[in-house]
Amino acid sequence: MHCAHFANHQESSGASWLDRIGIATSTLCALHCAVSALFMGVLSALGVAGFAAPIVEQVFLGLAVLLGVFSLGSALRRHRSYAPLLWFSAGMLVLLVVRPMAPSALIEAGIVMVGAAAVIRAHWRNSRLIATSA
Image 1: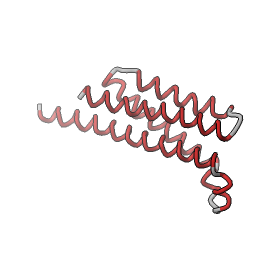
Image 2: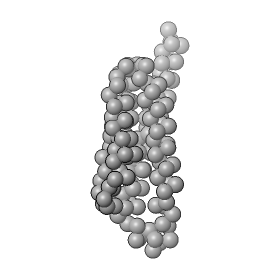
Image 3: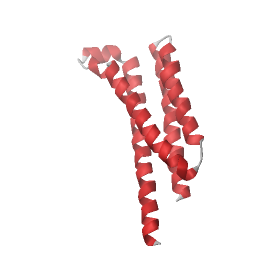
Image 4: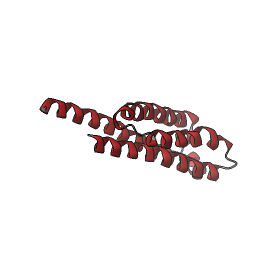
């Protein structure tokens, strides 16, 4: 019995660990976008305009997708709630579909905040569901 409890604890800790990384990555992505959109002139003057390069955005989005799929997908079998997956899907839809249509950098930054907040909410909800299902 003790071994089974230990195994369950390890499984929930692993998923929670992925959720914490997902929250951190989404937060950094949102901050990156806000700084890039609002302070591009300052970044250029400081010689760090590469911070706003498209590859940085692509890395953040790729990490968000990978972390979401692994964390939320594996936890779904355990807690059987689709809420985190729906939050994640909505956030990624905003980031991948709505954001490119933004008419200005300021509006784009706001859209990214909304999308990132939904992804963060997905990971937060997922970690809470895992904790209560242990």
